[in-house]
Each structure stands twice: as C-alpha cells, then as structure tokens.
Image (cartoon, rainbow, N blue to C red; front, side):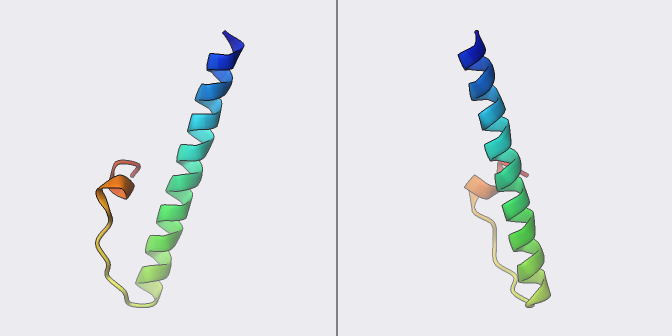
Length: 46
C-alpha cells in the first residue's frame, strides 16, 4: 500500500524534524543558561 508507506515516511520526517528542533532548543537554552524542564510530549521523542 503506497499510501501507508508515504504516511510512515512523513511520520518519520516529522519526528526527526521535531527531534532536531528539541535538541536545538535544548542547546540554545544551555547557551543562555536557562534550565527549563522538558514537557512529557518532548521527552517521548528523545
């Protein structure tokens, strides 16, 4: 089923993009000395 395949690819793309954003955010917060707790939503993608 091509549609299922593309859905999986898009899901993976979205997850990796989210991971990248989260890690970038963490890095930025560390750079500025902020120590904010991650939300459960963010934690499940790490």
